[in-house]
Length: 181
Image 1 (tube, rainbow, N blue to C red):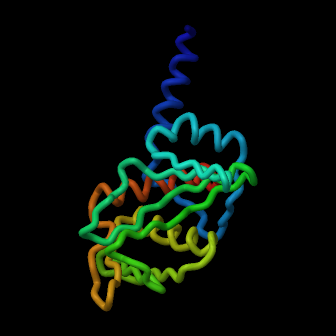
Image 2 (cartoon, rainbow, N blue to C red):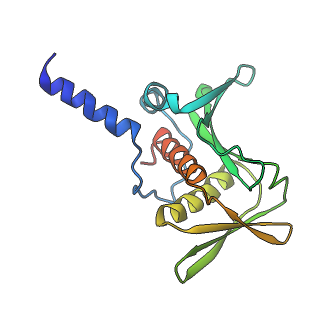
Image 3 (cartoon, rainbow, N blue to C red):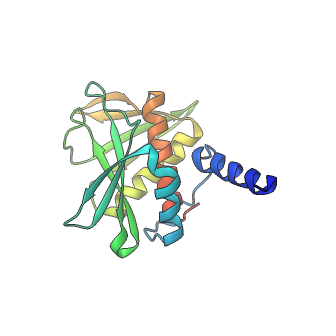
């Protein structure tokens, strides 16, 4: 095999298997459109990091990161990537664990040094879910610490390396799938 071709293949594999931790995403550009190239890249390179649930009747493929946090002791919001291949679209699905329950609204406090603020999520459609996760992703990239309000108590949230990394990688893979990066 040609040495240049072997180097190019190795370089692409390294880039495909290690999502960049510093990539910024345009928060004002929410899209759901996929194409054959982005879907093939996801299925051929990134798929191995996910568990697949096939919903044949709905013609949807749902991907959940294998290293997601399945804790039942601490609040966790896992993400699922929903590939609606029939319409060339992909969505994010928020999957809060039982600790969070079915709250009407989620309020997340973020803190970075002396700076702090809140991110509020009111359950809604696919756009509100992506807008909420965009804000969390942006703050996660900055190194913020998070707390989530549960029954008038503030509880640490996204505080383990495992939950932060699964969230970050899933968001990065989703952004690449819908061509936002």
